[in-house]
Length: 350
Image (cartoon, rainbow, N blue to C red):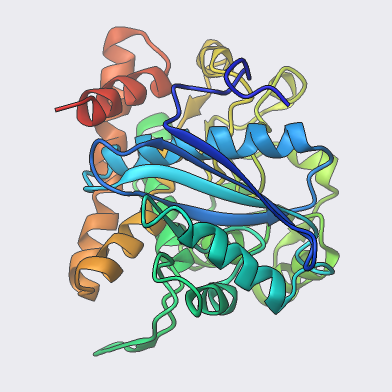
């Protein structure tokens, strides 16, 4: 498995492979950049089709965390970890503890958090063997008891970002009657759909798990759509909230939405697809900017959680995206190129 010559290798500081045959752990941790601080990023468990697919995902995700933290003005670097396996059938306490020991072996250079397939309860198990896992503590505030789950902040930030994109692309100050296709009904996607429903939007949803789609139909009045049909719907906004690389040569010609804005990481299969979206007149909200609410939440969990401060910081995603949209139009450049340039200025060696 080539690493240094891998297409998505981007001067990563460290890529480490972990294996524990007794519990079935096969995992990869990638640290991209720590110029701004320790590399923080989620731990994902997914049934990757191949080791190469898992490597590509962890390389792309860890790089994205560097850019995400820089754009959110956080003193954090970028890292990520992936566990190869089905979280619904292969996750065990023994495997989670083994993953915790793997994280611990890096001595705090990488700090893990929850992600797809790994929830707050799982990070609590990992925390029993390493202090280098964040997000699992329960905290009390005026709003009640928080579980430490950052996904509500990710959802809220994505909702704020959609409002910015809709304002810029469509000139609409509210979301009443807006048609939105949401791909992925996990914690983030469902919470985002809830915000959109409350704001008056109409929803079309898809997911690889039928029970999650049904929950959105029953509780939000959403319309269920087969996974392959979600791209071609006649909607205002396409909101990817599942896996990455879904904006590609096959899907772009099918898109009818004027806006692509969702919580999924690494939505563009290749950088050139941002330019293709622009040429099609589709406004793209760079994924690591719009979905930064979760890492903002986790940062404040580490430094002192105050709900009002978190909400305000997450809300600033609106202004950040507006700046990117305006600069991209002025410079006639794809939005992700503008976002990359700003982020690279912030995390370059000081």
